Amino acid sequence: MRKNMVKTLAIVAGAAFASGCSTMAAETSHTGSTSTSITAADIAASKKRISELETALAAKDQDLSNARARISASSSTTSSVAANASLFPPNPKAGQCYARVLIPATYNTVSDTVLKRDAGEKIEIIPARYENAKETVLVKEASAKLEVVPAVYGEMQERVLTRPAATKIIEVPAVYETVVERILDKPAHTAWKKGPAAKQSANVLSQSTTDTGEIMCLVEVPASYKTVEKRVLVSAARTEEIAIPAEYKTIMKTVVKQPATTREVVIPAKYASVDVTKLVTPARENRIAIPAQYQTVTRTDKASDERMEWRSVMCEVNMTRDNVLALQSALADKGYYKAGIDGIIGGRTLSAAQKYALDNSLPAGSSYVPMEVVKSLNIKL
Image 1 (tube, rainbow, N blue to C red):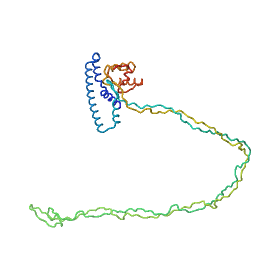
Image 2: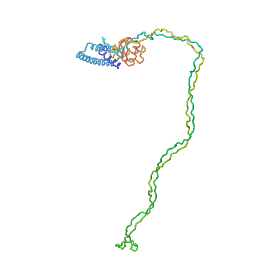
Image 3: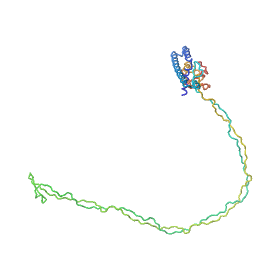
Image 4: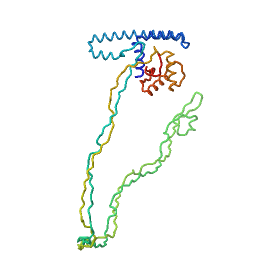
């Protein structure tokens, strides 16, 4: 974003403050008509571009007049007017273009001597001196100990319960039986049958003669029965509670006939003759003074704050094809430009000019060519 701003400022400032740019461009176009490398179309394009820049300059002048009117109406202070004036290059020269660039802060390296370690004191310990001697010493003090007299045990029989008495609930299933029963299958009834009453026996209740001469007898039909088997409940299902007696068994049991006791036994003290080391001279300390140590450290102090600065640069007014050809040729002679020399300003030309400027401690930019670089390459614009 900063690079685009710088490039825009360079173009606008070049148009706004190089009052002789148009005249110089016209002169350059007139001079270039004699060169075989610039065509009439190039000259026409340059004149068109100059016309557009003049239009843009007029618009900027109008914007500037409006801004000054607003500043005057709002009673701005002299300091704010001076701040706005910094938006324009000081002492501009006719025929030159300017770019407003950010100059980073500068720093100085300062060396200081600082205390690395405070003065101190070293303590040397001179060890104590000992000598060997014979001495009777107590090895083990007299003491007493308790001896345990074990208990006396015997065996006896004992009847113990192994399972307590309990009750158990059991289920008694229902009881059924099969019985034979004679049941009515069809009840007694009457029916009309053909034939004389003599053939129907005593079951004839009445008789009649039809139109055809047939005799119809009303006969009594007796009831009919059938035998069936049926499963009937004799006793319903139930539960019964059964008592389960307790169980016992006889075991042999070990019992204490005489409990364990303790008795106190005295143990006499023990002595021995041993080699001992006796102190002859106690340890002492020797103090040695240690001087303080210093070291040199470096720090970085800010020499100047970052600031905005106007720089004279090449712009579209003086960046003609001949000038770009001269710039590319000079950079190629120095070993910085390795692409084809075509007279067209582009990224490779700008990168080569920037690298040359940095290597030679000149003002440098990624989107513009400072005039210091042009002068260092002995290019006449």
